[in-house]
Length: 514
Image 1 (tube, rainbow, N blue to C red):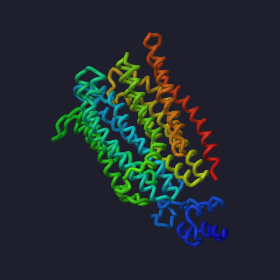
Image 2 (image 1 turned 30 degrees about the vertical axis):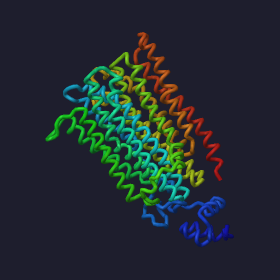
Image 3 (image 1 turned 60 degrees about the vertical axis):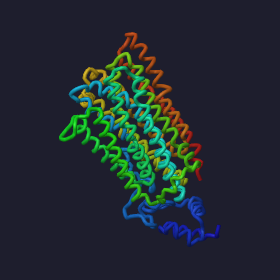
Image 4 (image 1 turned 135 degrees about the vertical axis):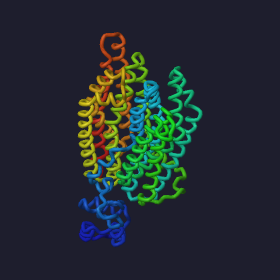
């Protein structure tokens, strides 16, 4: 490395000289520049940009004035822009359930149909979501390292993987849906409703798949506001179209459950198109070219090294819902109540998932920069904001369970639903913390820790515990409410394990940074 006047370098750096100008002036490479900054423990004020950051306020390399991206500056005033994320699927299912629950004919069967196909939807989308999570963390880390060429390949390969995922979903929608549905029930009305709804969602699944990917690409560059806009626009389209297509308003014929499916996929396609436009116009940190979609084994391996735990986590959610339906099979009312409170639970928890998606790229970017302070700030603020939102969620569900029951027209399942909500809502704070833990682990290459937490929450603890409790309920010794206590017990136990994982990761990966 060229001999550098450290005193003069410090002065230029603290005065906000461009990084390119610093490299040219002192005849050094970017890795050498990074080494100098770390060795001399140099930091800029929050109005100054960091290495590899082309978007933050104070960057003299082309940033717009007053642009304060949370990912790239380490500031957290924009973190709440991320609260609407991959949980779009759950939001749409909740909206659909609210409308079909008020159909004039067949509302009970329709609600049951949506409840039973939901695990399949989650399983279908799991791979797309996991791919997006891996892309998010890897792209943010790559940008933090200043490697724009690799960033372009990461983005391109994620879109290639999205196309493969859609083809698989399409084939299942055409050839596999009816056989799957028929294996679960003999009720011809439910079979028909479930088959129609699920087939439409599978065949036109490219909307939710590519929405998930473009959302993560925007989040990784700190443009979470635009992913939120896409989410909100799609949700509004779904809400507007649901009553029109389900009940038949104006020239649109009454389509029932099929109408709910079409409203859902149209909203998802609108979201995907909007985010594609944002991505092409705003994500200028790396090139956009079809040549970068050429499969790269190394990059794909890195994406799934991070994203595979998220894929498994989503798949576990599907398995958990399915098995819980089997456990509650002895009581149709309890089964329906579970399906409804699960929707409310996901509606509350999607705030936690949103914050997870906000802190994951923040921490990943900081990890790529070897900034201990910014990593710890990301963890601290992420957990704090998550707890605050979950406390609010608990308060709402504890105070207004009857209103939620009325929203879904719960009918005979009303009392079961209200009883479940009062018990399960206790677990929301701990569940939110567990979700935040998983985002932190993913950002710090802790994919295995994230997987373990998912296994504990959705398989290892919850299902055996619920099964044991159901044995006593079926024996007539106690009410069905005992089963609901499996949820808070599970989340508290997983939270304790998650805290121990966080301490170990902090010691081995964060404190060891130089």
